[in-house]
Amino acid sequence: MIYSYARAKELTKKLVSLQIPVLLNGGSGIGKTALVNEVALELGLPLIDVRLAHELPENVGGIPKVLENSSFFEKVLNVDFVPLFTSGAVLFFDELNRSHSWTRNSVMSVFFERLLGGKKLAPNTVVVGAVNTGEEYKDADSLDFAMLARFAVINLEPSVDDLVAYFKKKYPLASALFIPKADQIYNLLHLFYEKVSPVATPRTVEYALKIIETYHNTEDRETLRDLVYCVLPGNVADLLLSEIDFTLIKKIINGEKVSLEEIENPTILLAVLSNYPFENGQQLLNAILFAKKAYKSLEVEDTFVGFLKNVARNNPKLFTDIYPTVEKEIPSLSEFLSSF
Figure (cartoon, rainbow, N blue to C red):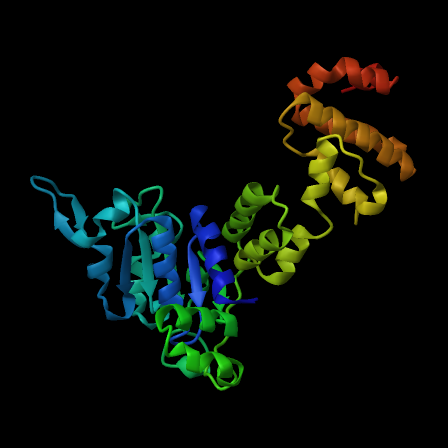
């Protein structure tokens, strides 16, 4: 997917807050560096801008130094990197795919292990990279699978509104000339580049699950979807998110009325409910009572026993706590528990 400047910035802030490295991809001069600067300002963190194309591996990954009276060594890092390990910072690797492969390899551990030169990044340090891809940038390397698999990918293309807002803020007088002709000029701008798709690996699936764990309660389903699309290819993201509406699950566990007609795939939703991490007995009771009615409406009441087994196995203490109430609703509960 391709995102406007404003949307790309919003998604970047949410992703880096989860310690998911972000890769910005777009044509030259479209605002990748400006976006990272704004993110750093809004997060209240210093920006450490590393132009990898101009750096040797040891300048970024550290120079080995033998420890005194020892056969071991440690890596001495650039003093400018200190905030990365102490107070936190935004670490920006620009021109990532224009750098030498040795230089990229020297910083690979930053993107998932959160290590640079063997030193652990501070918890609030965030990592962003930027590339230019496509035929217009054929002198640049393509990122290998192992590198790409460490990033959430945001394809950036500023909209007309993005450009108007940027120019108006920076050049209030001169932008008065641009605004009336903004659409015409925009159509003549060189914005073309090759879209980069994220890759599906266990690591990027973990990124997606982290996003869902954090944002599943949001009413903004489009943002949840876009965040997952940044870390997984479209077909995998669709499969993971399809047929589930977390707002309906929230209503069910809170005891609100939900009809089967509202649910795209009741069977999948019931399977999710049977594995849901309930916070209290009331939520579990609400889910059980909904499931009992749902299985009856679907005319597969015999499978309700499997649902009960799963929720009892996953929530033994909560299930025990609500047992007296559930027993009133399900006369055969004692028989079920004796075989559990």
